[in-house]
Image (tube, rainbow, N blue to C red; front, side, top):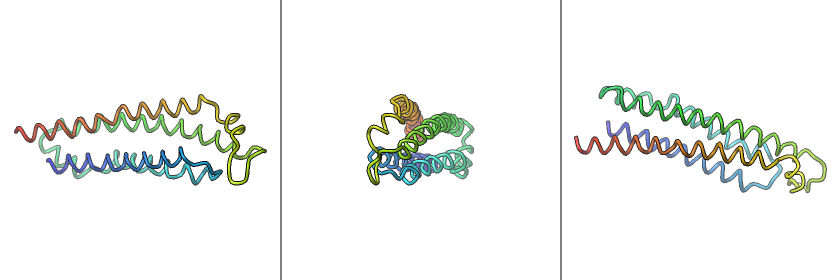
Length: 158
């Protein structure tokens, strides 16, 4: 049971790190390769979705032998994270559309996007929406941490 809980926790953490790395790379990118820059973020989202939806079948089977409680907690947390990923993906789609429009507009330097075009096609609201979606997603991650830590605590006192 402990191995199953640790496996879930470490895999969610690894997927989260991949997602964070992709976001940091996207934020630092100044090129005009919109699809290439956004692709790793979308790939990280898809990997996280797949992991949360189908990645823990064996672990859930082991945990369910102790009753449905722990599995239900994980499923509730994962459902919430998946909802937040949907919200984030929508905001990311809107941001990508704005950046693509800025890239395709006249007046850009070679291999880049002018700050004037970014200001025109990527309004502050897009950034705020993306930050808000990320904050909401970030608020749900501690649920998984809590479940892992609390389950480990209970196992150590049992």
